[in-house]
Image 1 (cartoon, rainbow, N blue to C red):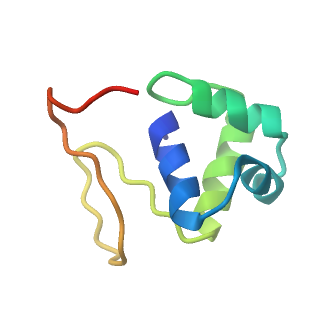
Image 2 (cartoon, helix red, strand yellow):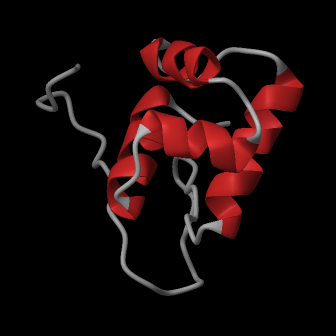
Length: 88
């Protein structure tokens, strides 16, 4: 699963806009907008979601699930679980 926050963060790390991600994944810009507007886990058509995750992966993004370790190295950002984290 990918969260909307992870999707926005992935775009920021790549320095791309929604249109570029849509082009990379072969989906529409409104699809990316809907995904990023989701609360929590991204909801949508599984095929579209898979295309986006695959495109991010090919671009060098590693999506790290909750309580998962990242062993592949490289730079990244992870949000700590805390009750003091502001919610978007």
